[in-house]
Structures are given as structure tokens and as C-alpha cells.
Image (cartoon, rainbow, N blue to C red; front, side, top):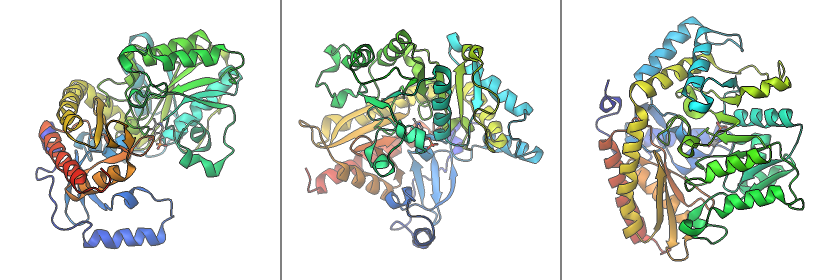
Length: 462
Ligand SMILES: Cc1ncc(COP(=O)(O)O)c(C=O)c1O
């Protein structure tokens, strides 16, 4: 199998004005009968028919290049035949098993333990959660509290850890939280190394990672207002916060400081894990060593699955007891079969090299925009986790959600799916399936460049 055969060869193909007739009817129906919190279709009027690789066909036969991959879930592309076969074979055997062991479950646990970096390989225990990333975060919160008998957590500005109450408490965006307070108490948000918008007004080359120093200071000063935390949670590359790639050394430094203060460090790899950045786990780029890892999205190969890994020494405390995190769907066996196939595929096809090569190509190609466009302040990326800062003024860096939204809409109209995120909802985010080809990536980027030029030229904001 080659990656070329995974996608609709004619992508992108837009037949007529979007959304088409069938799509309009279905969107209307959804709007009338589903709950008002439905979100994506209000931004992108897409009715999905089917998908192949890094391409999606809508209900009217329009075909899109998918630079979003279901928010990073379908790492191996839509309907990857190897994943589908693994799931079909499993579904003929059994579909629900609670947490009774099955051969495939144990194979997946062994695979996850086996892909951990050297210092941790085969030395972490795996605990499956409910089907979503948020539940992995809930479990990590409970686990860290249970191990330390403490209550406070440190999280970071720009963090996204999920929507359930505990996970939401660790998420920074005030829009999502304000109406639902109080959430967990004793949560402190410290600055992430967001160098494009440094809260300390420093320049990366000379700043000596002042944000990591500030973390140290907060833990050291008895009057900083932070009680000894149960854990510190951090995305080694921030996703929803705007594809923020911290400078080399930041994540390792945060880990070492945590270790100095005896605080378990939780790396949230739900979005950045499983080769999204060109390594199985994004903390590996910095040689950092976590105590707890949260994972989901690509873990289930497109099917819902989440887990944490924790250092096995924790079990010596004998506190994380039977039933500490129970539930009906603590690991879905079809998703586990997909997970095994995903990890095998990533190794067999040397996906990390493909991601590194293609990611470098995409970022370099998009850097044209940073140089030449009036509304792209920065292009950044690690592997296939890429962000474009949309601004109205490159000097002041004033963000523009409005222009980012227009880019998303106009890219859709031209057959490319992108999402937006970031502190000010002004970052165009690219998270294509990792099996996307150079050819499709090139086509998508060309369309995106034309779109951005058009938005710039027609906008009243610039
Ligand atoms: C880093 C990170 N953590 C947690 C979550 C929550 O995962 P879910 O949406 O599956 O609950 C997300 C989702 O985007 C994420 O990016």
C-alpha cells in the first residue's frame, strides 16, 4: 500500500456553490432537532458523506482536502483500509468487554509501553479511561490527587484539556468556563512559552526562558499564593491554544523544576501524541521525562479511546486501588484493535520520518505568507501541527478573529478544511492526517495562499 492510494484522487473538487442542496437540508434539520451547543457545522457548513485518507466527500459529492483530520483524531486518514480491516475482524469476535482482558487489549497495552522513550519503555502502567480525552484528564487529576493527597494544580495559559468539570478547570479559555463556575478550586495558570506574544515582552534568543523561571519562582515563594500542587499539567506543544511550539528546553525545564519540588508532571499528549509532531510523544523532542501521560485522539485510530500512562513506582504507594476510575466504557475493544493497527502502521511505514519531512516542507512553504502577506504574523509548526497567526497589523500583532474566520470560510469554499483556535481565536490551525501526500499538501497550501491573499485584498480591516 502507498499513501497515494488512500485519498480521492480528484481532490479538491467543488461542484457548485457551497453548501449544496442536500447539505443545506441536512444542516437545517440538525439545527432544528439537535441541541444548540452543536458547534463545528455553524463554522463550516459541511455535511460529511464519506472520507478517504486526507480527503472528505460531502453529501453532494464535493471533495475537500482535509487539513483538520477530525481535530487530529484520524492520524492515518479516513477509512484507512488497514484500520478498517482490524476493526471488522475484532467486531466479528466481540464488541464490549468492560475491563476484562482480551488478547487485543493486552497487545495494545504492550504496544503503548513499547513505544515509550528509552527511560520509560516498559516501565509505565496503562489505565484506560472513558472514550474521550477529557476523561483521560479526569483520571490524571484523580490519580495525581490520590498519589499526593494534595489538591492544587498548575496549568498554563492557552491550555486546553477538555470540557468535563475537572478537565475544564485546567482549561484556560474563559469563554468555556465563566457560566459554569465554580469548578475545581486551587487551579493556577502560569505563562506558557508563547514567544510570539510573550507576556514578559521578551525576545526568544535572549529571554533565558523567563516563563520557566517564573514557574520556579511561583513554587519557591511561600507567598506566591500557590499551595503545594498535586500536579502540573502541560501540553508539550499547545494545540487549541494556537499550535504553540515552545522553545527548545522549556518542557524539559518545567519537568525538572516539577521534580525539584516533588510535583508529578502530567504531559497532555492527547493532541500532540502519536507522531503528530514527528515523534510518538512530543515531550521526546526535549528529552523530558513525565510522571503521567494522557492520551486519546489518534490512540484509537479514529475510534474513541483514552488512557493514561503512569510511572510504575506510583503503585508502590498502593493507593490507586481497584475501581478507582470505573465506568462502562473503560476501553473500547474495537478502538483497541484500531489502536494496535495504528501503532503497527506508524512503525511499519516509518511515519515519523514522513511527518518530519512533510511538516518541514509545509511550514517552509507557508513561511512565504509570513514574509509577504500583510495579515499573517507568524507561521509555526512542529511536524504536522501547524499554526498561522492572523493579525491586522504585523507591527502591533493585533489579532483578528474576523479575518481568521473569513480564511476558514473561503478555504472551505475552495475545497480545503482548516480550523481556527488560539487565545484570540485568530490562529488558522492545520492538523492534516499524517498520511497526507506531498502532492495533496501542495495543492492545499496553494489554495490556502490564494485564499489568504483574497481575504487580505477584500478586507475592510487591514
Ligand atoms: C490537549 C488536549 N487535551 C484534552 C482534550 C480533550 O479531548 P476530548 O475532546 O476528546 O475530550 C483535547 C481536545 O482537543 C486536547 O487537545
